[in-house]
View: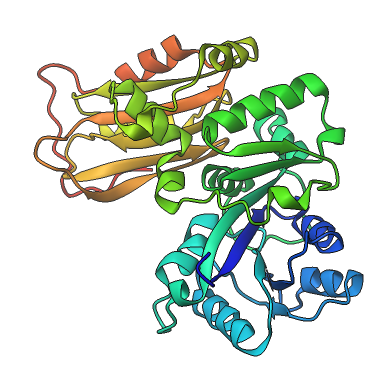
Length: 369
């Protein structure tokens, strides 16, 4: 590690078991002297208090009333550097808030933060990014169509969005609360998770009872590779028959067979002909329950901008995300789901396309979603 302190980032939705994992690690730190930064959206950091009560360890830093993936990035890096200056430790464990996206938190330890001149590479080495998945919550959100009740609603993003973002950017996924989900459903959930992030190691557990060595000092994390290995990106690459290094991790026949046995599948919809805005917007409003994740770009008639689409479970977002390159104006959408009717989805999307000879002039109108 070149004298730099290794860092493990722990993410996961509210109640997934992040604090339970941190306390479990502290009970058997595998020889590491660990410092901890705990982030919470509330004015009172309950997680930091719980960790402090269950451990006599010094060096627990409380970052409250904000999120380290956005507003508290500078505070995160400054506190981490101050810890390194004032206390001797050889491992840093960062527990992010339940709504944090792991990618921007990871970037703090690779690229730094805007309002501080601290260079993270002088102090730290990002070692592992762990997502703790509430397997029971995932099942309810994507299968039963029920959003689990929580005591507070810290932002307006649906639970499904946060869950998918946390799965897609990590190198270890702890499927927690497995005791609350039937075995056959658990197999299906793990298959879906693998589709969303095929390169991450997956560990099943209850009460986050994992070997601490599986999340400490792994040296597994590679920022560029993890960012490129999101399932939807992998499926786009495979669909275009790309033979680059990033496309070589295609599913084996055994893994494909396992996915098929659980009704889990993916496909890519490609089309050069543009969509009629209202037709596409109407279709997006009436989303099918069988799709767990959809992501990509759409060519919409009358719009110079690229229309990006991002869907996770019942939550759908669509809107302008930039300009087209001259040779790249075409729709590319990845769908990942369970028991999807691919033929019907393709047929419905084809029905949203502009007909031969049909014209539409909507350059002044925003995308109507």
